Length: 210
Image (cartoon, rainbow, N blue to C red):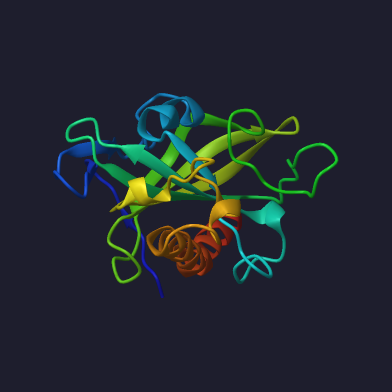
């Protein structure tokens, strides 16, 4: 069973190259302090795209409205090297926020769902899965109601510059990319698969707690 350890003081994510800090997580501050999630992400990510799965969402999910996963690329402000990380978000209820006329999907950004700065707690995920895994219990507003969204951040990892192709960071260009690019996308999908069972267990346990 995967155990989440509550962050009591501070968690620091460091650049894989120079080891300087990239972002900090406080017990009740969110990944990026008090800044809204989508606004703050612009400062640590320059490009990204949805993590694709060939056949279906990772178990135990049944629909793309039950999670949102994105692979993002950034540049360290201290040494300039590129890094990458994954955000995986799981809502309390299925969220159908796909583009009009397109397939239903849960898209976790300020344009689709309002992630507020109210945080119920921050936790470090089991290092047996990955030692760079943090979970935030966020409040959100969607379709006129307040819901809870668990946002998981996995990374940073080195090699972010390898993600950039002729159309930037895009999963649709993965097959035509170099071996390193394909490996990063495959690793991102594997990480989402690895954290999803524990993420869903954690969300469901919260949903049944008075």
